[in-house]
Each structure stands twice: as structure tokens, then as C-alpha cells.
Image: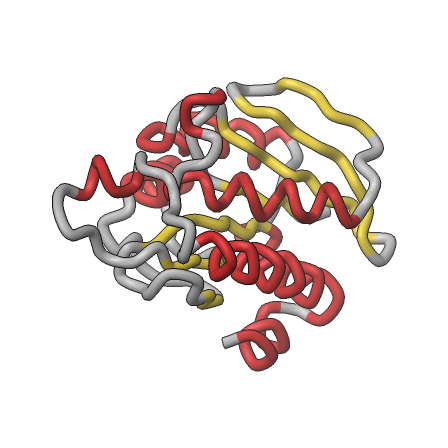
Length: 183
């Protein structure tokens, strides 16, 4: 079993914001593969599905971004997972809009959702996919909670599709093959 966590903020108000790109990737996977069951558990919406016979959990924390670890840790423990079985997808202001980067582990880059998850798990040693949203011309909060411009939307749709394909590769072939194919 593997757990995929898409970072974002719950509610319609935030659904099309830059900070919710992790949710969008999980929605793309759900579109490609049939969700067998969906439930609310430990401050998250959890979708159950299979890809290549692998059981997957698609997790959208409902705790708001900065408290994502509050939802991830109990699910991680409940399903008795290893760090290598967890993959987190999130936005990154240090990458240009639409860029996709996959890593086997790493730091948080100042991302509050990732900081929360790393602190709650006591480790940074798990795979992640970062999707570039670019640097803001003004304040970071307004930027991440703002919507994509018309010119950014096609880039971001391509990034969402690429990230979903990278996850499918990770499931089938592992993180090294995924990084080689998609970085």
C-alpha cells in the first residue's frame, strides 16, 4: 500500500488557488483511475483506489495547509506505512510555473505544509513532487492564495498531468525510475 498526499486548503474559496495544486494532482489520478471507496478519517478525505494492483490512498488533509501533519501522521500510523510508501505533492515558489521536480527526500524549502508533515513524522526522508508556481511580485500569502492567470493555466494543467503520470511511474517502477523519467 502507498499513500499519496496532495497539499491544499479545504473549501470552494481555495479550490483554484496556487496552494491547491497538490489537490489537483490527486483529482487527476482519481479521474484516470476508479475510486473504490472514499471516506473521511483523521481530518482528511481519503480515496481508495488501485493502480497496477497496488493499493493506494489519495489523501487530502482538511486541516488547512499549515497543519497538514495533523492529518498525515495518524493516517500514516493507522495504515502502518513506511516512509518510502508515502509521497507528498505540493506547490513550490522556487520553481517556475509549471515545472515539476521529483525527489526521494529533502528539505521543506520553507513550505509550511511540508514543515508540518516533517515535524509530525520526525523525518524528511520520504518522496515528494514539487510543482512550480513561481515567485510572487508582492507578498507570498496573497500569491499562494491567489488563482492562476490565464497564461499560467495551460502550464499548470500540463504540470498536473505530468505529476500524475510521474506518480503512476513511481507506483510501477519506484522513485529512481520516476526521477530519471520526469526530472
